Length: 113
Image 1 (cartoon, rainbow, N blue to C red):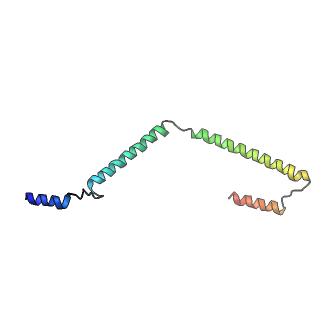
Image 2: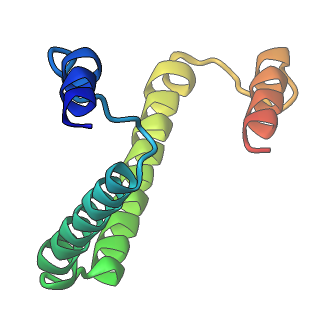
Image 3: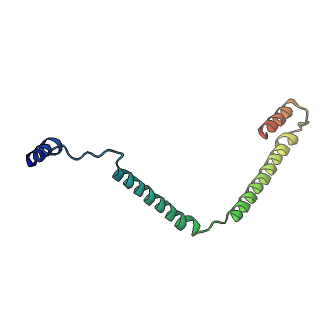
């Protein structure tokens, strides 16, 4: 019995190293522990970085909307200024039925859909 044990030790274990399959209970337990630790770190970051600081979304949104509206107004004023100086100031007539105006109007309608 002792000789058989030593023989098995020499032929089966010694020199081969321990080989662990990927689906042993110990490996599964270690993976699960790693996932839990990772989730805890993620939630800790959430608590510290986001919830603790608070966000004022409504104020940001109002400011952004106000800035966009101001930008649109300035853009329209510049556009109309260019119209007055470049086209009307040179004696050209701009009617709503010229082919170019109709093309631009149609393109604008398509873009807004």
